[in-house]
Length: 481
Ligand code: NAD
Image 1 (cartoon, rainbow, N blue to C red):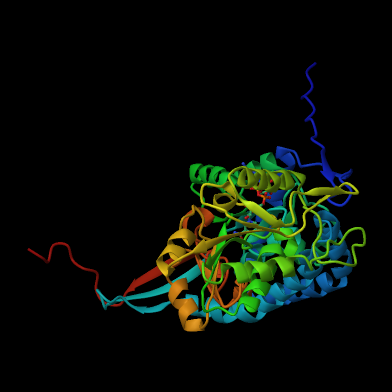
Image 2 (cartoon, rainbow, N blue to C red):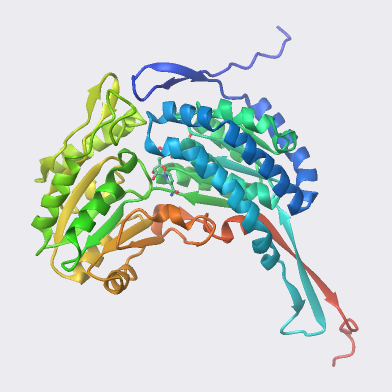
């Protein structure tokens, strides 16, 4: 023999969510190739991190232009990945908005993050700070909103001066090719931003090669990622699952509430981390609310067979349809009533589900405790505000929540008692509006680390270095007795 064994290449087949057929495949890099990519990015980061922020802004704006030019093919690739989910059509615009938004916001935020002054306990000591980007950020992202979520953390990190390597989900990798084309058209950016395709194994290999990591995905995998990062002593930011509650009070405008709940639970076939997954309604208005919700749910049209028509598409991930079906089976077996909708159906190979409203649900059912991630609306009665808050907080999650009441004040009073990072008042599903403006932390198992929105989302990629100068004489050890 005497020859090094050739490294076996893994080829992963990719399922098309509308046909159920594997019509695409990816080849993850070998460990050696991944190491090479990371070395190249680290090399590129030296100049990128040392350049002025103005220079990075200029380069990022060039990329925004290239993204605009590639928008149609990006939206199409993302749409094939997600079965033409509504978010896919919006994603290129959201990413471009993110790049341009950070171009405007970054200078002020980074200016404010630099500190200068005198020590409050030793006034002869002057201090100043420098912000040092972590050289290489790793991003591991999920299959829902694949393009958008792969870049939500990467964009502020690039402005901060980091290089970034991204591994999107193996379920939805088709957008990577057109996106890499847009990156290649801005060579300076290409020296500090790259994608690799692959699965959990590739994700773990990324952790071995980076200085800081952002993970978006499920709680069990988030835990594995956090453990691997802890072994390497690198900071990790986890954005995980949710089981978002909404409380509808006796005083709420029920039509408004039903409209908001339907959108919050069913948009994107319910495959959004901050989808409404539990609905608590005051007993006096429960039946009237449910009646409205069912009527509105029945107006939703599946976008099958015509992708250009209708409101919701298939499940992106076949396994997810099985989980949602299992939650419905468990609920019905334990006494729940399905008023409209029901289990997933195979239409032309895609797995679709009509908006599904259930009543007579309890917290003994999976549908009220585990993340469902489908267009499902389990509605439960409550008697008192205290009970509604207790039920809303009876969860391992704490991503976001919503309250719809007669007045904003009433909604806010109840919202303040809920343990979740983002509380929508008088509507649902407003989490995306935070962007660069507002920070929030996930509660419980929904996340870990600093906020991914607001000013802190860029400063978390910068190590703060303090410089201390003695403006008088050094303290003399021997002068004190
Ligand atoms: P997932 O945990 O299965 O996978 C997420 C990513 O992690 C994928 O790229 C996958 O390849 C990778 N991965 C899986 N196991 C890994 C491991 N052991 N080591 C390293 N990488 C690993 O999640 P998913 O099913 O793709 O996405 C859906 C989940 O993501 C839901 O729970 C949803 O709520 C959550 N999510 C959260 C947010 C948020 O902002 N909080 C946003 C979107 C989705």
